[in-house]
Amino acid sequence: MQHDLSEVGKVLETHEYSMTSVLLDAAKTFKLPSIIKKTGFEKTQGYSVTEIIMLMMLLPFLILNRVHDWFTSYFREITTMRKDTIYRLQNDERIPWRAILYGVVTRFQRLVNPQKTVAPNSALIVDDTTDARTGFHMENISYVFDHVEGRRGTKLGFKDLVLGWFDGTSFLPVDFSIHSEKPLRGKRRKTQYHKACIPGSPGATRRKECTTNKIDQAVAMIKRAVKHGIRARYVLADSWFSSKGFIQAIRQIRHRAMHVVCGVRKDKRKYEYQGVAVDAKTLLTQLQKAGKASRCRKLNTRYFEVVVQYEGVGEVKLYFCRFPYAKEWRLFLSTDTALSFVKMMEIYTVRWTIEVFFKEMKQQLRLGRCQSRDFDAQIAHVTLRCITYIFLAYLRRVDAYESLGLLFEGIVAELREKNVAERLWALFEDLLQAVLSSVAELGPMDLQQFQQSPQYAALKELFEKSFLGNQLRSLDMAS
Image (cartoon, rainbow, N blue to C red; front, top):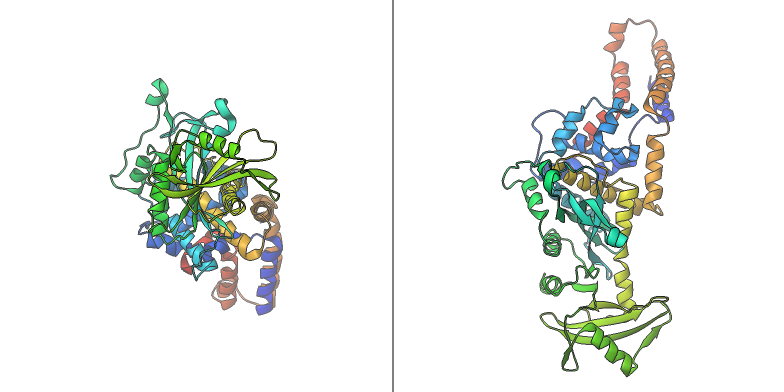
């Protein structure tokens, strides 16, 4: 009978109906149920948190935007779970989504860097992105400014402030907060959804962050990341975040353990150069008159670099540079005065990894497609996309995929080769033939006798393992 069981297994493998994808394998590797359990949140009945979360994480791979889309598609046959089960979880303000995300990040570090070696170009990167939405009834929805589109860049949606970590090889989203900017007015504000949260709950905390100054929130996230054991040499930011208060706050973390490398606006802030306080434009004019411009052949760029005193911060190095075909001089600042211009640019270029992250999250993982009016659902949506991104970053790292897009397309191709109805029918035909052949070899036997045989138990186990719902339950057992 062992041979017969293997034949049934071959049928399941040939039809690829087993939904064991690399995503589920990654969840087992990361011990996701254990991470969730350590946060202290558990459901008392029904489906486990892990089962529901994994189903929600599969949505972008099935090219589905919302939970509702799942239950109106062929894929509804995959699980007996009802959509209300998922809605209740994603709208629950008690779920510590931030703690779950940090648990996944910490597990990633243990898997790929158990010695916790800090790479020379490792960096914490802070930036925000426009998360455009439709519908005025969403909780905390507002008009936000998208600087990429200039004066016409005002959109309805949120601003997602993200703290990323580049460990020298991979970029990971470590923390985030969702922000409002220009609130709705009039009738639209009156019809906007509002939810009364449990005081002190994770959901209530997130709502307070929504109206917090983004620079203050960025500093808070960096401090929180350091407390969770995230180590980096530098903090990178663009000119929007590079206020004096931000630089001062970062330099005070862990006794000046991290340097700041950032773009800086040529505004009215003063720097002490040769005993005189001057602003950036005046300093650039003085350097140009002195004729001390250098040329970088590698970047085909003219530049000035000068060490100055920045009140409240100390010694910093300023880099004025003009890139090819650019009219304006750019200004960069580093608190590490030992960095040459080329080395500073190499480190600052790491900041581009967060821009790639935003692009892949929106294009591949369908960030921003959640249309729930509940703010807790928006937090759940962004968190689960971040966890999925970390899983894919891990798989890309260990399996040497060239890009996340290539890895994503492979998973989608596996899950959507046929729709569920077609796959079920073809599977049924072949399995019926394989099982009948197996039963025939056992000789004369009535149905009740066969159901009590070890062969029947083995066949039942083989079938159960091939379906997603049971694989999700086995994921809980893995921890």
